[in-house]
Image (cartoon, rainbow, N blue to C red; front, top):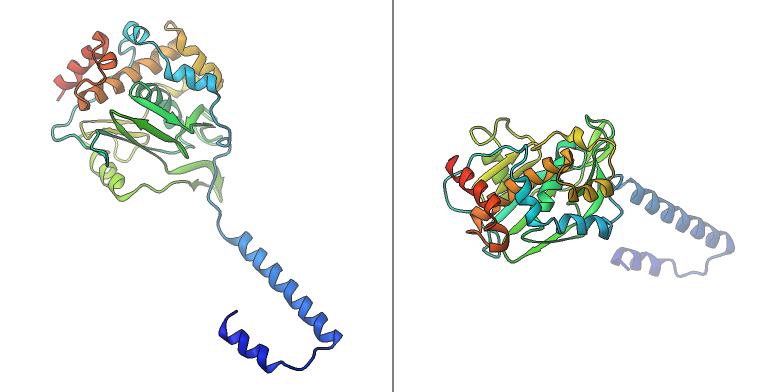
Length: 288
């Protein structure tokens, strides 16, 4: 009890009558009500509308187990190369090459690009806690099915990953609600490399930095390919190399994979030494 309250209690030593006790009870109830109201008025962290359910095991298995033979059959598919950047490889706290992603849950281009990014990074490590999500209902390519990095983690002996979802897919007062705040080091990389001449449009999302050696901006394929599909359907379709959607996702995943292989010096060899990936590695490094 604070000192001021103790002093007041000592001054009120005479016994209280029923009316005084009743007034005290009412006052206590008012205090409780005010505290509850104040708590309700405190801004609560935004949650994405569909980000409560963990990705089902079947979806995760499909993303984590795309055969490298299928990757070889597709190669780059319709994906495009990105220019390489000279300089030392960016490394994380463990000393491993670092991959940074900055996006937002409402963003349909982020929704599309997460699919190949998850496939690519699943070749080097393992995600935990990925959840179902979709792009904003009020944006272009509305409600594009995807997963979100919000609340997830990634473990690997080859590469470190930082994924930041800056905004929710829920609107508050006409604005996409804040979700996560990037750390200063992520902001520095974003500001330095998410601008010409490294990318064509400054500040666009999604933004992917692979070890400060390669940067990807916007989606590598048309999000319209995912229209009307569920997460389960997109994941299951990855076993069909003849599908236009699958060729787009895996082609982009192979380019991201090759970029990561440059930073890991072709480790693990079971991934990076696949001839189709090596072909992309040579094209990426030649594009400097």
